[in-house]
Length: 388
Image (tube, rainbow, N blue to C red):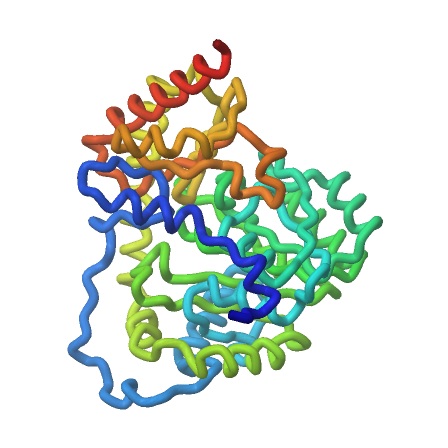
């Protein structure tokens, strides 16, 4: 059977495989970036217009585009509703951007580590993934400049606010410096911000896209982490030179995004009840973050280093004695614990051993300590076997 050449590069998503394996109710899962089901808001459908059962505009519902543009302007991103494209979750933004920019061998620039599903789609299209190491407040600026001087990547993909998987939030200085470098070298920015609203210390910062003076940009977000992932409603906002091309790619992909989900998102965005919901969500996740931090101190203090995340859904652990954490998966699952190995978050996983991404939002707090205790035991057992 003759498939396209691209299919030879198609990799399955390890996180999806782990989530499937973790469906058993006895499994304590730290694996996926799942919102807490207790915090999924109760939604009403009684006033849903029947007309939304019809085909819609590829750009998205006009009222929703206006609301999203207003929210973005409040963050400091100069834009109009005409620059907003409603997409089927922000994952579709990455698909459209890949189609727009990537041919086999196209160089792109990424943080290391970076979002697993972004890597999956960029590599599917044949990208040559260059990386810049992540520091505690954003990318290493000297290495970023060096990469931009030596290469001319088609774009740079960044997650500046509570990065997945590292939980890093860029400092003001790093945001300004990155914007200046992208303007200097004329490199397009793809800025992914699914976790911006999940801040535990009240901190907020202007998007990097809002600081650019010359470079093209795509800014993308979603309601999946704050409302319902099942709505599959995300959005992109693009500089005017890119928007028409992204719109045509959207049309060829799926005609338009789920109109019923868009209507539900519109009932919340910009409203007082949404602000109240976000406030409750932040408090809930802050408590879970704190409980997770305490349990990590108990079970992992001698095994790993980590920073306490100020937002988002993840802890990023670096083992003091590195090993390939992918080799821990089967033993962890046999002990009814699921986690996400860190290696797949790098374009060259075999050269970046010894990290774990642990989600704190989804697990039942009553099972938290036992789950981390079992995971720590699996790590210790493997390290002892390697040392023997």
